[in-house]
Structures are given as C-alpha cells and as structure tokens.
Image (cartoon, rainbow, N blue to C red; front, side):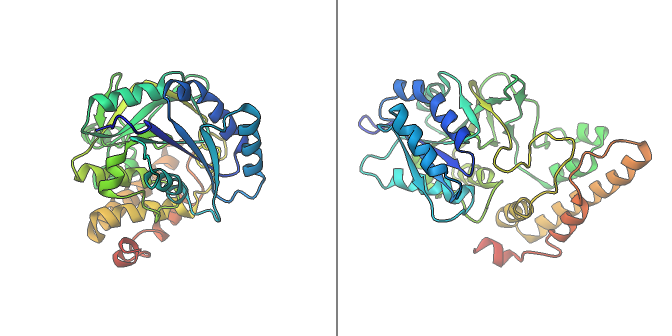
Length: 331
C-alpha cells in the first residue's frame, strides 16, 4: 500500500536520439507534476551520441523544470529494459522510494489528468500491480494497447490470417477490441505503464536480456504468477507518436525489414516462460500459417504489406536454428 511520507511517482522516460520528442513529453507533464507533489522524472539517455543529453538538460534549465526533472546519461545503448532499469534502481535505492513507477515513451504526450487517474485507480485497487493508459494517435485514432499473452494458438492465428480461424480462436487473439471501461487484461503497451513499487521488489526489474519488445510482456507475466493483476484504464489517455526511435511501427508504404532484436526478443520470451517444446510448437504454428498465407496472398491477388524477408528471417530465427534454452533462460 502507498505510504504517507513517500513521493507518489517516479517517471522514467528513455531517450535514444529523439531529444525534441523527449522535451515535448516533459512539457506535457508539467500540470501532472504540479498536481502530484513529490513526483520525479528521470530522462535516461541510451548513449545517443547526438547531443541529446545537452539539449534535454538545456530545456530543463530554460523551463525551470530542474526541481523535478533530470537527465541520466548511460554509457552504452543496452536497450529498453537496461535504460529503464537504471532509472528504476535510482528510485528503489533512494532514501524515499516512490510508491509507483511510470514507464513513459519519449514519443508520447500526456493528456491532463492521465497520471492522476492511474494513481487514483491503483490506490483504490491494491492488488493491481500494473495499469496502462489508453493511447491514441495525434489524429485521435485509438491504438490497441490492451493485450493477451502470446500462445501457440495466437501464433497460429497470427500466421494464417484466416477470418474463420480467427473467429474460432477469438479468445486467444493477442490484440482484441479495446474495452470502453477499466478492464483487467494480461498486459498493456509499454508506452505508458504504471507499476507498483512492490512488484519490482517481489518479482525483480525488467529483464535486460530483451533489447527491445516483449520486456513489458515478460514483466506482466512474472507479476501475474505472483498474484498481481494488470489493468487497462482508458480514462487515462496519452498521445503516442509511434515508432519514432525504431521506425519499426511507423506507418509507411514501404515496410522495413524487421530488426534482429525483434526475433531475439520473441524467441527469448517463449523459451524463458514456456520452454523449448512449447516454443517449437509456437514456431511451427506461425511458420506453417504464414507460409500458406504467402501462397494464398498471391493466388488471391492481395497486396504485400509485410516486411521484406519475413518468412526466411522467421525460419532462421526459430528455435530449430537458434537459441538453446540454457543459453537464453540463464543469460
């Protein structure tokens, strides 16, 4: 439970070569910080090497944000979990650790009241370990951000892309339609996720074996196994300008080849949490379905909107060719 003498919140914003977005994100937090006394914001910089640290520090000084915001330069780009953990550790090891931690993407703008709503919700529901905001694009279009855990059946649906199969497997689809009210879910998108301090104390920090992607899914699963619940709270809203650091999810007419770390993170998640056999079955479900889809797409004359070399990359990064369980789970 939250204590009476500790600050309510530490916000971790992890920057990698997006200083203008990080500064805009800080500006959107001003009213929330004023409404939540004691709140601190740490902008971790994953060794951007582009002047980000100097630019963000200058903005903090110019705007008078120094009482609540600071920059934490890191000595290398160790990925999302690595960068956020550096800020989280500072909070946990401080003399007055916060009740809650918020992981917030630099390419987000926080709408007024969004963080107050999350804290109020978690104060009122002590078994909630994580809570995520609703997300929308700059044009107001909602983004899917409340998800189910990945399973063999969800991989089957993801690969086959067949309407009748999706109807049969609707209970296992990773990204179901968004609920309109606060709802328990398996995991929420990491662009804005609030985490209770006791979760980190009980299950540990983010797994730094993930460079990017799946680290929040892994944390939510570990917390679930220890009795914590995760909720989607759509009354709390952020604007998310997706894919600005990675370019992976940026809408484009020419999809980019997926980076190696996406395949590594997926494989690590399944191996670590479900074992080699389950991962092999999940790989088979995805690969068989996607191979059939590639043929069906040509026969039906459908456009190709997939990243280049997705099938061959998926085969080469499956457990049949990479990553023994003992190498992944123990690293």
